[in-house]
Image (tube, rainbow, N blue to C red; front, side, top):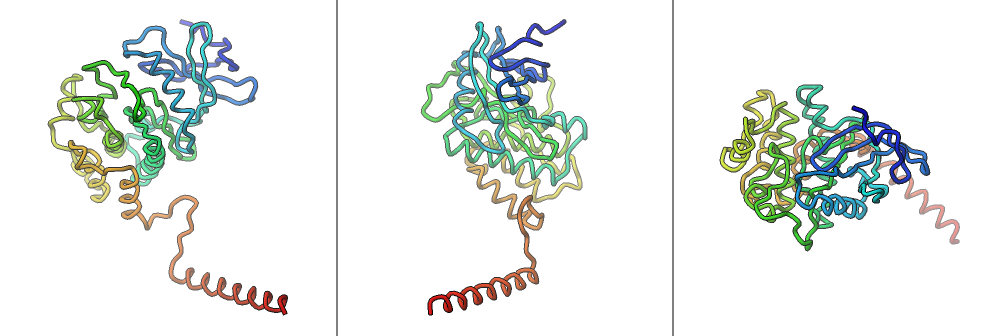
Length: 312
């Protein structure tokens, strides 16, 4: 069946093809006629079971426009046209992490750490703005062709001090990555819930399977609440024990037992993997450090001598 929006104009964009479908709306690849660039256009579904869907959708746009970060999908414009609410976003060339996992089976330790660090940096900024994403999962992590990860879909995000739009007894988030507190009382979810969900996402990426498989939504949610945290090493025997411990701590049932901030997780990863050369960083060995010290010292002495001559 032909999608009626293909070929139409939404805002300043020509809709070209459908590239995604979520619980709240569809995502299309479009072309921004004024900016002359490809874009992604998210459109709210006319009918959805999500409570206060329109308010949530527009709130995603408002939240997204307040924060800009290399590891967060950028929002270009928002609007409403003929009863259609839309968000025009940066178009990211690549796949979401779930697609990457399906293609590869599971991803390498190095890729997992790189993706984790990128998303944790995005969550650092979110925490600064008192934003809780509440739906961290592989589908919401876009991986570019160069391996850079970007966090997408702030549709379930909540800002500190906001009136809670979630109706009583309503659970938000994705069942395979949802934190226990989101199941029990979603209003108590904070940035540590995002750390839990990212831990589940990393578990899935490294092992190739979700941490708590199940045949029903209830079974999966009960597992998040009651079952012990699964260890990566039981599925991947060759897994690095240090990485296993970090992911397990991210996935602790009690919020107080997890890393308390994204920065703590970043520090833990950097401390363990400091021997791995980070992108765009200069790593100096002892010989290089000594040589650089001599060169800089000599340069400073020459500069001081020239300055003395000029002042006499």
